[in-house]
Image (cartoon, rainbow, N blue to C red):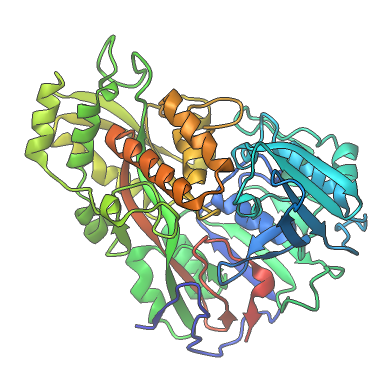
Length: 526
């Protein structure tokens, strides 16, 4: 079976079979991008598509190294440790021919810090963005920020004049159901420009002939046809029949079938993403359970019991066909702050779980709704179905409600779920990213993906202090202390770390990136 494994290294090609069209890449995955507005949704497939069209100041290359995109140099100021200075790339134009300069960067970063932005946590330490000249940007932070460039790898830059002309200055309120010009149109500096966009149907991109990097990257793909195909069998059939050239999410049950097909490869790598369940631990009463006047999830013994009821090894073997790594914390192993002992701490103990349920006063159990996506993560609905049976063994009777991610994620943003599935990748490779989004109490700067209603003032302060702690040894100690609280509080139930399985025609030469965000300007076609 020709499955090649790559950990951020060049994949081995097993065939030179050419694509049906030498310069067109037909790309499919389970779910579509939610929006083209670059600051409205911090969500993997959305970011992956936007990376083809728009660019940040810096990004990660195929090796996972931070390299320049719209910035060519970046360094802390020698005069003020609270300032990062970015020198911008000159001679860059947007797709409509407009010149790129520092005013666009200042506009975009200021926009990304506004209320409806889903990226504001990444800029929470920013006090001001300055543009002293056309090709210099100064990011002023509340105290020295040692990892500011890490926070910018998915922070896309818009054309200010285009945004103003098309009523797109304000970030799309995605959770509120708003539709805007920027949601379906884009004017980036990236290697590909939008030809047509039919949400949930098809997006067509064409090579940007004026791309600044045309002499630095292969750019062998001149047209991208991106098609979301939610149904797993249909998606695989499209690859097997030659209707598509590349799918990001080969279903685990079809790996051998795809890999053994002449002219097709499966390439795998560990993903920088962990899958878990979140629980509403803060409300006095829940809307979606059978307990009147109380919140069973507010009791840490109930949360621990539910954690002990999940059999991660069974999910790995039966649901994931071996394609996952059981998790004990909601941080991937790639991330600074990940702890091997913590990650190995999850176990299954039904007797202890039942005892904890009885001690908490729920010996007879209760029912609750579990909200789950069915087109976002690998076997997401099947994982939830397995958890339903596991939790029933301790008296937690789960009503599963699975729906597309476009309907699922607003439940979290609008605090309309009490028990839910979420997956989290960490593009900064640092625990601060997890804490800012998932652990800090929700306010106007932090916690936008924290639907647990958990907040802890002391912990919030410690999380905020990470952004300006340049003593990396002390910072790592603080990260470890925060993780200990997260583990003790059991506000999340870790399930597993995902494994990526990309399926493609053998003539596609690329690398399986841990971010699951293919950058097609690097692709080669043989």
